[in-house]
Image 1 (cartoon, rainbow, N blue to C red):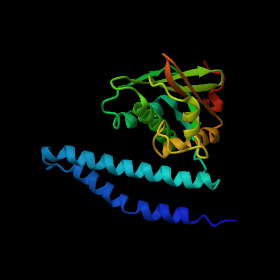
Image 2: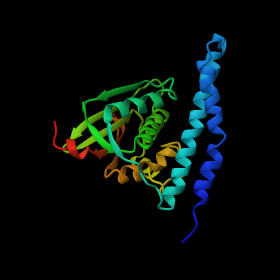
Image 3: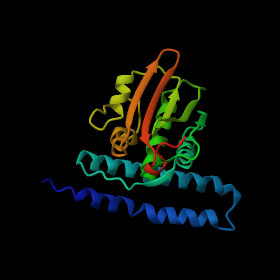
Image 4: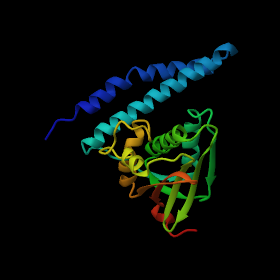
Length: 224
C-alpha cells in the first residue's frame, strides 16, 4: 500500500507559520491603542490568513480524498446557524454580488462535519457569484423534502449543467471555470460521506441551481 503519511506531514509544515500569524493579528485587533487608520489593514490581513488556511484545508482534503482517506468529524448541528456562517464567509468574497438567504427549515439539524460543510457551501456560493451576470444576486434556499433537507444555490447564469456537475467531482474536475476553487471539487465526495446527493440544473430563463440533499439528524427525522 502506498505510504501517504506525507499528507499529514505536509499539513503540519504548511500550517505551522499560519498559527503565529493569526495570533499576532488577533492581538493587534484587540490592542486598545490600535490606530483607526490601521484597523482596515489588519482586518484584511486576517481575512487573507483565514483564506489561506481554508485553501490549505481544501488542498489537504483533496489529497486525502484521492487516496480514499477523507474522514468526517460529524456531530448534530443547527442548519440555520451553519448556513448563516457559510453565507457570511461567501459574502466577504463577493462584495459586489448580493447573497439572498431564504432559509425555510427552522430548527432543522443535520449530522454534519461543520467546518467542511461551511467551507463547501461557502465555496459553492462564491462559485455561483463568479458565474452570475454582473449585478445579479445569488439565492441560497433551504427546504424540506421528506426526511432530508435541500440546500439550493441559485444564480442567473446559463451554465452547462453536465460540465458543472463534473466540476463538483474530484475525478471529473478539469480546467473549466464553471466552479472555481479547490473546495468545489470536493462537493460530491463530502455530500456522499454525509449520506446525501448533489444535483445540477440549468434552464434558459431560470438560471443555474446546485442542490444538495442531506439527511436530517436521526432524532429529528419525520419532524415538520
